[in-house]
Length: 259
Image (cartoon, rainbow, N blue to C red; front, top):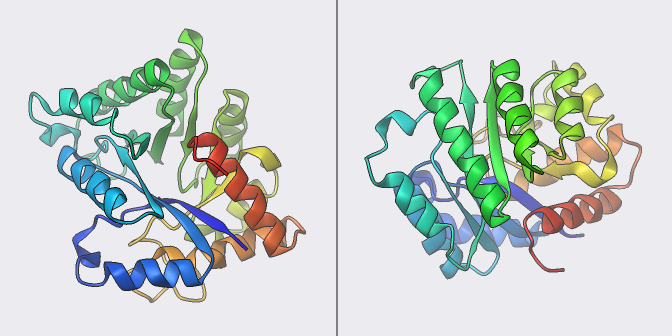
């Protein structure tokens, strides 16, 4: 069995003293590939550095909506430059967030649009963070879709069924994290059962969102993606090995990572 954790913040300092063990546990659990996802210029650099150190890691570069108000004047130019690095396979995470609302929504939209335009010019997929702002995100995606095809993923999806459906129509992939396994996530599981097989991904969003039955474990880590994958397989009436093969194939297609 082979799994691809499509969203893990292994650059987080919580992993600095245990990163080797975390990656070894991931490999032992069948997690052969991990996308190390950035949120700032600094973490973009660190993700690239880690991907050069560990063969199972690949990197994204980008500026998270909750940090775009802290970006310096030349930070975006550096993201554009870093996107050309060999181990970089994605942009972001980007998107919008009205829950924390750290940055003005118009500034968030500006940076979201920058990531999508960079994706459309480079072919690198973009990673979308969405929290309490389904309509805002859809508005940006619709506008971008009118410019050209979209290549990206709605990460750790927890939005509405209508949002998932429209994102799929626009060519997006949908990824599920530990929330899928939680007792009160019946609606999310229902949505997960409707996603076409060729658009389905799994992730941990580690160090956050540890899955059931290990919700109390801190930090979450890539090895635990097997619990989300097991939940997804069960609700779709599939064997875990088949679900793993399917989502890994999808991830490699989206992130242009070879078989």
